[in-house]
Image (tube, rainbow, N blue to C red):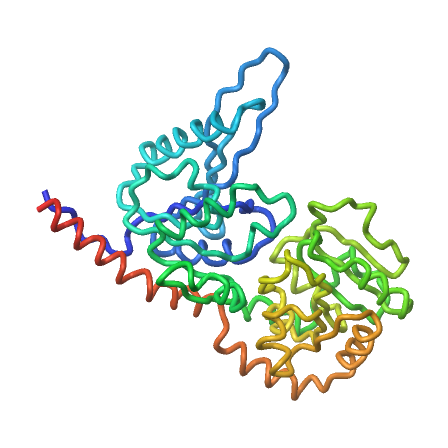
Length: 389
Protein backbone atom coordinates (compact mmCIF):
# COMPACT_ATOMS: atom_id res chain seq x y z
CA UNK A 1 0.00 0.00 0.00
CA UNK A 2 1.29 3.46 -0.90
CA UNK A 3 2.01 5.93 1.87
CA UNK A 4 0.18 9.23 1.86
CA UNK A 5 2.22 12.24 0.72
CA UNK A 6 2.29 14.11 4.04
CA UNK A 7 5.11 16.55 3.32
CA UNK A 8 5.31 18.86 6.32
CA UNK A 9 2.71 16.98 8.35
CA UNK A 10 5.56 14.85 9.67
CA UNK A 11 6.23 14.86 13.39
CA UNK A 12 9.50 16.33 14.63
CA UNK A 13 11.55 14.71 17.41
CA UNK A 14 14.12 17.11 18.84
CA UNK A 15 16.99 15.95 21.06
CA UNK A 16 18.40 18.77 23.16
CA UNK A 17 20.99 19.24 25.91
CA UNK A 18 19.04 22.19 27.34
CA UNK A 19 15.89 22.05 29.43
CA UNK A 20 12.80 23.53 27.81
CA UNK A 21 12.14 25.57 30.94
CA UNK A 22 15.70 26.93 31.20
CA UNK A 23 16.68 30.13 29.38
CA UNK A 24 14.37 30.83 26.43
CA UNK A 25 16.65 30.81 23.40
CA UNK A 26 17.23 29.27 19.97
CA UNK A 27 15.65 25.81 20.54
CA UNK A 28 12.52 27.29 22.13
CA UNK A 29 12.09 29.92 19.42
CA UNK A 30 12.45 27.44 16.57
CA UNK A 31 10.56 24.48 18.05
CA UNK A 32 7.63 26.78 18.95
CA UNK A 33 7.37 27.74 15.29
CA UNK A 34 7.68 24.17 14.06
CA UNK A 35 4.90 23.19 16.47
CA UNK A 36 2.49 25.31 14.43
CA UNK A 37 2.98 22.93 11.48
CA UNK A 38 2.90 19.60 13.31
CA UNK A 39 3.67 17.75 16.52
CA UNK A 40 7.02 18.51 18.13
CA UNK A 41 8.50 16.17 20.75
CA UNK A 42 11.28 17.95 22.63
CA UNK A 43 13.39 15.25 24.30
CA UNK A 44 15.46 16.51 27.21
CA UNK A 45 18.39 14.79 28.89
CA UNK A 46 17.38 12.34 31.65
CA UNK A 47 16.38 13.29 35.16
CA UNK A 48 17.77 10.98 37.84
CA UNK A 49 15.02 9.95 40.26
CA UNK A 50 16.05 9.29 43.84
CA UNK A 51 13.68 7.56 46.24
CA UNK A 52 13.72 6.03 49.71
CA UNK A 53 16.36 3.35 50.34
CA UNK A 54 15.15 -0.04 49.19
CA UNK A 55 12.37 1.39 47.01
CA UNK A 56 12.74 0.36 43.39
CA UNK A 57 12.31 3.20 40.89
CA UNK A 58 11.22 2.11 37.44
CA UNK A 59 12.46 4.16 34.46
CA UNK A 60 9.83 6.03 32.53
CA UNK A 61 8.97 9.13 30.57
CA UNK A 62 7.19 12.25 31.73
CA UNK A 63 5.50 14.22 28.95
CA UNK A 64 4.07 17.66 29.47
CA UNK A 65 2.74 20.14 26.93
CA UNK A 66 3.98 23.71 26.90
CA UNK A 67 0.79 25.76 26.90
CA UNK A 68 2.19 28.68 24.92
CA UNK A 69 3.67 26.69 22.04
CA UNK A 70 2.05 23.26 22.08
CA UNK A 71 5.50 21.62 22.16
CA UNK A 72 5.45 18.22 23.88
CA UNK A 73 8.32 18.16 26.35
CA UNK A 74 9.65 14.65 26.96
CA UNK A 75 11.62 14.05 30.16
CA UNK A 76 13.24 10.60 30.54
CA UNK A 77 13.27 9.59 34.21
CA UNK A 78 15.94 7.12 35.27
CA UNK A 79 16.90 5.50 38.58
CA UNK A 80 20.22 6.40 40.14
CA UNK A 81 23.28 4.18 39.93
CA UNK A 82 23.04 3.08 36.29
CA UNK A 83 26.13 2.46 34.19
CA UNK A 84 26.60 4.38 30.94
CA UNK A 85 25.61 1.26 28.98
CA UNK A 86 22.46 0.75 31.04
CA UNK A 87 21.52 4.41 30.64
CA UNK A 88 21.86 4.13 26.88
CA UNK A 89 19.82 0.91 26.70
CA UNK A 90 17.00 2.32 28.81
CA UNK A 91 16.86 5.60 26.87
CA UNK A 92 16.70 3.63 23.62
CA UNK A 93 13.77 1.64 24.99
CA UNK A 94 12.03 4.78 26.25
CA UNK A 95 12.28 6.45 22.83
CA UNK A 96 10.78 3.36 21.19
CA UNK A 97 8.02 3.48 23.79
CA UNK A 98 7.40 7.16 23.04
CA UNK A 99 7.12 6.49 19.31
CA UNK A 100 4.71 3.59 19.82
CA UNK A 101 2.57 5.20 22.51
CA UNK A 102 2.19 8.52 20.68
CA UNK A 103 1.78 6.80 17.29
CA UNK A 104 4.68 8.60 15.71
CA UNK A 105 4.93 7.25 12.18
CA UNK A 106 6.22 9.84 9.70
CA UNK A 107 8.85 11.85 11.55
CA UNK A 108 12.19 13.55 11.23
CA UNK A 109 14.87 14.07 13.87
CA UNK A 110 16.42 17.34 14.94
CA UNK A 111 19.60 17.23 17.02
CA UNK A 112 21.10 19.89 19.25
CA UNK A 113 23.30 17.37 21.02
CA UNK A 114 25.29 14.72 19.13
CA UNK A 115 25.37 12.67 22.36
CA UNK A 116 21.77 11.62 21.67
CA UNK A 117 23.05 9.39 18.86
CA UNK A 118 24.05 6.85 21.49
CA UNK A 119 20.38 5.85 21.89
CA UNK A 120 18.83 6.94 18.59
CA UNK A 121 20.98 5.18 15.95
CA UNK A 122 18.26 2.61 15.33
CA UNK A 123 15.58 5.16 14.51
CA UNK A 124 14.40 5.48 10.92
CA UNK A 125 13.50 9.15 10.38
CA UNK A 126 12.71 10.56 6.97
CA UNK A 127 15.25 13.34 7.57
CA UNK A 128 18.00 14.19 10.05
CA UNK A 129 18.82 17.84 10.86
CA UNK A 130 21.75 18.89 13.03
CA UNK A 131 21.30 22.42 14.34
CA UNK A 132 24.79 23.09 15.70
CA UNK A 133 24.07 26.12 17.87
CA UNK A 134 27.34 25.99 19.85
CA UNK A 135 30.73 24.27 19.90
CA UNK A 136 29.64 22.10 22.81
CA UNK A 137 32.95 20.26 23.00
CA UNK A 138 34.59 23.51 24.18
CA UNK A 139 32.17 23.98 27.09
CA UNK A 140 32.97 23.16 30.68
CA UNK A 141 32.30 19.50 31.63
CA UNK A 142 31.75 18.47 28.00
CA UNK A 143 31.70 14.66 27.53
CA UNK A 144 34.94 13.26 26.15
CA UNK A 145 33.04 11.34 23.44
CA UNK A 146 31.21 14.39 22.09
CA UNK A 147 33.55 14.99 19.15
CA UNK A 148 33.23 11.37 18.01
CA UNK A 149 29.45 11.52 18.16
CA UNK A 150 29.46 14.76 16.22
CA UNK A 151 31.51 13.18 13.42
CA UNK A 152 28.94 10.39 13.29
CA UNK A 153 26.08 12.88 13.24
CA UNK A 154 27.66 14.69 10.30
CA UNK A 155 27.53 11.38 8.43
CA UNK A 156 23.85 10.84 9.21
CA UNK A 157 22.54 14.40 8.84
CA UNK A 158 20.80 15.50 5.66
CA UNK A 159 21.16 19.16 6.65
CA UNK A 160 23.44 21.01 9.06
CA UNK A 161 22.61 24.46 10.43
CA UNK A 162 25.02 26.52 12.52
CA UNK A 163 24.25 29.12 15.17
CA UNK A 164 26.60 31.70 13.69
CA UNK A 165 29.01 32.62 10.91
CA UNK A 166 32.16 31.59 12.80
CA UNK A 167 30.72 28.18 13.57
CA UNK A 168 29.70 27.83 9.91
CA UNK A 169 33.27 28.51 8.82
CA UNK A 170 34.50 25.85 11.27
CA UNK A 171 31.96 23.20 10.19
CA UNK A 172 31.38 23.73 6.47
CA UNK A 173 34.19 21.37 5.41
CA UNK A 174 32.69 18.54 7.47
CA UNK A 175 29.40 18.23 5.59
CA UNK A 176 28.25 19.01 2.02
CA UNK A 177 25.07 20.86 3.08
CA UNK A 178 25.87 23.36 5.87
CA UNK A 179 23.97 26.65 6.28
CA UNK A 180 24.64 29.53 8.68
CA UNK A 181 21.68 30.79 10.71
CA UNK A 182 23.00 33.31 13.26
CA UNK A 183 21.02 34.26 16.34
CA UNK A 184 17.78 36.05 15.56
CA UNK A 185 15.31 38.04 17.62
CA UNK A 186 11.62 38.51 18.34
CA UNK A 187 11.65 42.23 17.64
CA UNK A 188 8.09 42.87 18.76
CA UNK A 189 8.72 41.24 22.13
CA UNK A 190 11.87 43.17 22.99
CA UNK A 191 10.67 46.44 21.45
CA UNK A 192 8.33 46.66 24.44
CA UNK A 193 11.41 47.85 26.35
CA UNK A 194 11.51 51.05 24.27
CA UNK A 195 8.47 52.39 26.12
CA UNK A 196 7.90 52.83 29.83
CA UNK A 197 7.24 49.50 31.57
CA UNK A 198 6.18 48.72 35.14
CA UNK A 199 9.42 48.47 37.12
CA UNK A 200 10.03 44.95 38.52
CA UNK A 201 10.32 44.99 42.31
CA UNK A 202 13.77 43.39 42.23
CA UNK A 203 15.13 46.24 40.11
CA UNK A 204 13.05 49.21 41.22
CA UNK A 205 15.35 50.30 44.05
CA UNK A 206 18.57 50.16 42.03
CA UNK A 207 19.80 53.68 41.16
CA UNK A 208 20.74 54.92 37.69
CA UNK A 209 22.72 54.73 35.52
CA UNK A 210 22.13 51.02 35.07
CA UNK A 211 24.26 48.83 32.79
CA UNK A 212 22.49 45.52 32.24
CA UNK A 213 23.25 41.97 31.20
CA UNK A 214 20.69 39.20 30.69
CA UNK A 215 21.58 35.58 30.05
CA UNK A 216 23.36 32.63 31.57
CA UNK A 217 26.25 33.49 33.90
CA UNK A 218 28.82 30.73 33.47
CA UNK A 219 32.42 30.04 32.44
CA UNK A 220 31.96 32.29 29.43
CA UNK A 221 31.74 35.43 31.59
CA UNK A 222 34.81 37.64 32.07
CA UNK A 223 34.39 38.12 35.81
CA UNK A 224 37.56 40.20 36.11
CA UNK A 225 36.23 42.58 33.46
CA UNK A 226 32.92 42.97 35.30
CA UNK A 227 34.75 43.68 38.54
CA UNK A 228 37.05 46.16 36.77
CA UNK A 229 34.11 48.11 35.34
CA UNK A 230 32.40 48.16 38.74
CA UNK A 231 35.61 49.39 40.41
CA UNK A 232 36.22 52.10 37.81
CA UNK A 233 32.70 53.53 38.00
CA UNK A 234 31.24 52.86 41.45
CA UNK A 235 28.24 55.09 40.71
CA UNK A 236 27.24 52.84 37.79
CA UNK A 237 24.98 49.95 38.71
CA UNK A 238 25.67 46.64 36.94
CA UNK A 239 22.46 44.61 36.74
CA UNK A 240 22.98 40.89 36.06
CA UNK A 241 19.79 39.03 35.12
CA UNK A 242 20.16 35.28 34.65
CA UNK A 243 20.99 31.96 36.31
CA UNK A 244 24.48 31.15 37.56
CA UNK A 245 25.53 27.71 36.31
CA UNK A 246 28.70 25.58 36.21
CA UNK A 247 30.73 28.10 38.21
CA UNK A 248 31.06 28.66 41.95
CA UNK A 249 28.87 31.47 43.26
CA UNK A 250 31.81 32.48 45.44
CA UNK A 251 33.81 33.35 42.31
CA UNK A 252 31.41 36.15 41.35
CA UNK A 253 32.60 39.73 41.99
CA UNK A 254 30.64 41.17 44.91
CA UNK A 255 31.06 44.92 44.49
CA UNK A 256 28.18 46.85 46.09
CA UNK A 257 27.21 48.19 42.65
CA UNK A 258 26.82 44.73 41.09
CA UNK A 259 23.33 43.26 41.44
CA UNK A 260 22.61 39.58 40.72
CA UNK A 261 18.86 39.26 40.19
CA UNK A 262 18.74 35.60 39.20
CA UNK A 263 16.79 33.92 36.40
CA UNK A 264 13.73 35.69 35.06
CA UNK A 265 11.01 34.49 32.73
CA UNK A 266 11.42 35.41 29.06
CA UNK A 267 8.12 37.29 29.19
CA UNK A 268 9.48 39.56 31.92
CA UNK A 269 12.74 40.54 30.21
CA UNK A 270 11.44 43.67 28.41
CA UNK A 271 10.41 45.11 31.79
CA UNK A 272 13.97 44.75 33.04
CA UNK A 273 15.60 46.05 29.86
CA UNK A 274 13.27 49.06 29.82
CA UNK A 275 14.92 50.28 33.02
CA UNK A 276 18.51 50.03 31.76
CA UNK A 277 20.54 52.90 30.38
CA UNK A 278 22.86 50.64 28.37
CA UNK A 279 23.64 46.93 28.01
CA UNK A 280 26.77 44.82 27.99
CA UNK A 281 28.13 41.50 26.75
CA UNK A 282 31.13 40.95 29.05
CA UNK A 283 32.27 37.64 27.58
CA UNK A 284 35.68 36.14 28.22
CA UNK A 285 37.77 35.38 25.15
CA UNK A 286 38.46 31.68 25.44
CA UNK A 287 37.67 28.37 23.75
CA UNK A 288 34.10 28.32 25.09
CA UNK A 289 33.32 31.69 23.46
CA UNK A 290 35.27 31.23 20.23
CA UNK A 291 32.20 30.36 18.16
CA UNK A 292 29.30 31.83 20.12
CA UNK A 293 26.70 34.04 18.47
CA UNK A 294 24.96 35.62 21.48
CA UNK A 295 21.19 35.81 21.15
CA UNK A 296 21.20 38.78 23.49
CA UNK A 297 23.00 40.99 20.93
CA UNK A 298 19.97 41.54 18.67
CA UNK A 299 17.70 41.42 21.73
CA UNK A 300 19.48 44.41 23.29
CA UNK A 301 19.24 46.26 19.97
CA UNK A 302 15.54 45.53 19.56
CA UNK A 303 15.05 46.82 23.11
CA UNK A 304 16.70 50.10 22.13
CA UNK A 305 19.74 49.66 24.39
CA UNK A 306 23.16 50.84 23.15
CA UNK A 307 25.55 48.02 23.98
CA UNK A 308 29.20 47.19 24.52
CA UNK A 309 30.71 43.75 23.90
CA UNK A 310 34.10 42.16 24.12
CA UNK A 311 35.57 41.16 20.76
CA UNK A 312 33.48 38.04 20.18
CA UNK A 313 33.84 37.31 16.45
CA UNK A 314 30.14 36.99 15.72
CA UNK A 315 29.48 40.27 17.52
CA UNK A 316 32.30 42.11 15.79
CA UNK A 317 30.89 40.78 12.53
CA UNK A 318 28.43 42.30 11.74
CA UNK A 319 27.36 44.40 14.76
CA UNK A 320 30.67 46.07 15.51
CA UNK A 321 31.60 46.64 11.88
CA UNK A 322 28.20 48.26 11.25
CA UNK A 323 28.51 50.58 14.25
CA UNK A 324 25.57 48.97 16.05
CA UNK A 325 27.57 47.72 19.05
CA UNK A 326 30.73 49.14 20.69
CA UNK A 327 33.64 46.67 20.98
CA UNK A 328 36.19 46.75 23.84
CA UNK A 329 38.20 44.22 25.83
CA UNK A 330 40.15 45.81 28.67
CA UNK A 331 38.32 47.29 31.66
CA UNK A 332 39.47 50.83 30.77
CA UNK A 333 38.38 50.49 27.15
CA UNK A 334 35.09 48.88 28.19
CA UNK A 335 34.33 51.79 30.53
CA UNK A 336 35.14 54.32 27.79
CA UNK A 337 32.91 52.43 25.34
CA UNK A 338 30.06 52.35 27.86
CA UNK A 339 30.40 56.10 28.34
CA UNK A 340 30.02 56.54 24.58
CA UNK A 341 27.05 54.19 24.62
CA UNK A 342 25.37 56.19 27.34
CA UNK A 343 25.76 59.33 25.23
CA UNK A 344 24.60 57.72 21.97
CA UNK A 345 22.27 59.72 19.71
CA UNK A 346 19.55 57.11 19.97
CA UNK A 347 17.37 58.41 17.16
CA UNK A 348 20.06 58.00 14.50
CA UNK A 349 21.36 54.78 16.04
CA UNK A 350 17.90 53.21 16.36
CA UNK A 351 17.17 53.91 12.70
CA UNK A 352 20.27 51.91 11.72
CA UNK A 353 19.30 49.17 14.17
CA UNK A 354 15.77 48.85 12.85
CA UNK A 355 17.01 48.68 9.29
CA UNK A 356 19.26 45.77 10.25
CA UNK A 357 16.69 43.94 12.39
CA UNK A 358 14.10 44.08 9.61
CA UNK A 359 15.91 41.08 8.09
CA UNK A 360 16.86 39.33 11.32
CA UNK A 361 13.87 37.73 13.02
CA UNK A 362 13.16 34.21 14.24
CA UNK A 363 10.21 34.11 11.85
CA UNK A 364 12.55 34.78 8.93
CA UNK A 365 15.07 32.22 10.20
CA UNK A 366 12.32 29.61 10.56
CA UNK A 367 10.97 30.32 7.07
CA UNK A 368 14.44 30.05 5.55
CA UNK A 369 15.05 26.76 7.35
CA UNK A 370 11.69 25.49 6.10
CA UNK A 371 12.65 26.35 2.54
CA UNK A 372 15.56 23.93 2.90
CA UNK A 373 13.71 21.25 4.84
CA UNK A 374 10.49 21.00 2.81
CA UNK A 375 11.98 19.85 -0.52
CA UNK A 376 14.11 17.25 1.25
CA UNK A 377 11.11 15.92 3.16
CA UNK A 378 9.14 15.84 -0.05
CA UNK A 379 11.87 13.86 -1.82
CA UNK A 380 12.00 11.46 1.12
CA UNK A 381 8.23 10.92 0.84
CA UNK A 382 8.48 10.35 -2.90
CA UNK A 383 11.28 7.82 -2.42
CA UNK A 384 9.38 5.97 0.28
CA UNK A 385 6.23 5.96 -1.84
CA UNK A 386 8.11 4.45 -4.79
CA UNK A 387 9.71 1.77 -2.62
CA UNK A 388 6.38 0.67 -1.15
CA UNK A 389 4.40 0.77 -4.41
